[in-house]
Amino acid sequence: MNKIKSILFVVVTLSLVNGCSTMKDFSNTVKDSLFNYEKVKPWQRGELAKEDMKLVDDGMMTYADDHIYFSKEAATGGKGVGGGGCGCN
Amino acid sequence: MKSIQKKLALASCTLLAHGAPSSVIAEEGEDWALDASLLHYAEDERITVNKFIGTLNTNVSESDKVKVDLVFDTMSGSTPSGALEGAGSLATITTPSGAGGFSASTGSTAVADFEDTRLGVSLDWEHTKKRVHRINYGTSISVEKDFTSFGLNTNYAQDTTSRIVTYSAGVAVTFDSVRRSSGGTPEPLAEYGQGRTLEDGARVTWDTIFGVTRVLNRRTLGQVNVSTGFNDGYLTDPYKLISRTRLIDPLNPALGFDETATYYENRPSSRQRSSVYTSMAHTTRNDNVLHMSYRYYWDDWDIVSNTLDFRLKFRYESGFFIEPHIRLYDQTAANFYLFSIEQDTYGISGFPEYASADYRLDEFEATTYGVNFGKNFPGKGKLRIRLEQIEWNYANSLFDTNEALVVQVSYKVLFE
Image (cartoon, rainbow over all chains, first blue to last red; front, side, top):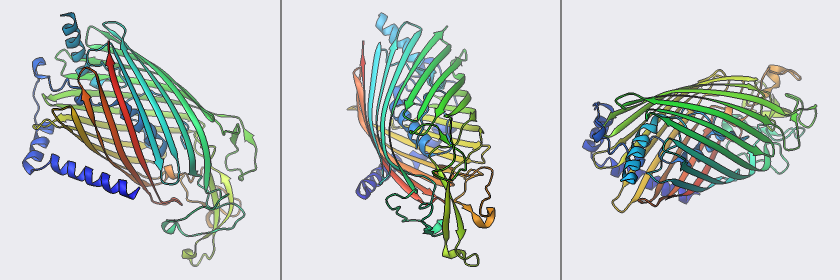
């Protein structure tokens, strides 16, 4: 288990460092995502229509996470309503 | 030409379906999409879960979609019961902060062995009207040896004329039946192994949600949801226990406690929950995709929680992707959470009105970190693999840490 933890930690760290390789990349991402509002025309929405841009982009992962965290944490919900419950231990 | 028109129409629906909670999502213009997943969840020397999830989406008409979900779980292992080491043993327990490394002996009540299976099925139908109104009806049923759940839900989403903003609302009701695997539920706060066996516990859960999703710019979507929920009925866990303890030396608490008895827990019969959830998806200038979300949660059991989730997906021209993931969670303890019923506070036979030593109601922090990777096969399907580690650190519970490994393999296939 410790070996897997170490590998995961290194992969996550390296990936995030790579994703924000310069402060300019990081500041561009913050500026573009949070402080750049525009009235987007229909023909400008090509990027938004991609599957990766869905707010829930992987239903299988979300479904499994909902079960895991519902069974281990007291706080639930927020993303939506519905779905089957469980008598989790 | 018809195929192109259909794909364009579905692409528009896909964009605007982001704001619809639990909505059936169009699948890249294909008539059918089958998504199947296998998950292995393993805690360190505790619970193991193997899960199969299957989802089938289909467009039954130009304006109607149907989704069927099937889930099958096998669960086994042991879980902390809330008790210390066992009534009658008069085991000496150190204070909570010194409880790390405690190992329960065989036959102890501190951990409870269990084995169960779960079968769940849900069905969703979504109808689109005039391209800007979507209504979704859903039902679900879930069955275990000691638990049965039946739920109904409906969600409505409406886009503005400019289709920049989507407003959504949803309501769900769930009816649960809870029992021990041997049948019935124990009498609350009765001594372990004694007391009456009561009828199965029943509870009703209502949930409502209101949301706004907005196109912030040509590379960013944002969403805010406000949710509230209410549980009414049997909210106690029929397996959980709590011990009565006395200080070995009241003048020197560091010497620890003696456990003198063990009881079944007791929780309030209602719970009011609320949360505010925000999320965002953003494509960066170098074509990576960032997903971030934050949830603030509070309820009338005095549990307050923060959840922050962060994923950054790196996409490559070959269709390969890799996505590191970090999730941070914390919560305060429920107002009736107790490490034990202390004899020095409640006397030899006195009780608080409600008491639970369930570690999930304790104050704790949790961290999830891991990576998702896979490959997209345009027009055919998508392979995803994820490897994650979850770590919990509890403030008061007897077992003050826990960790789990999550491995999930999913494959989605599209066909006409």
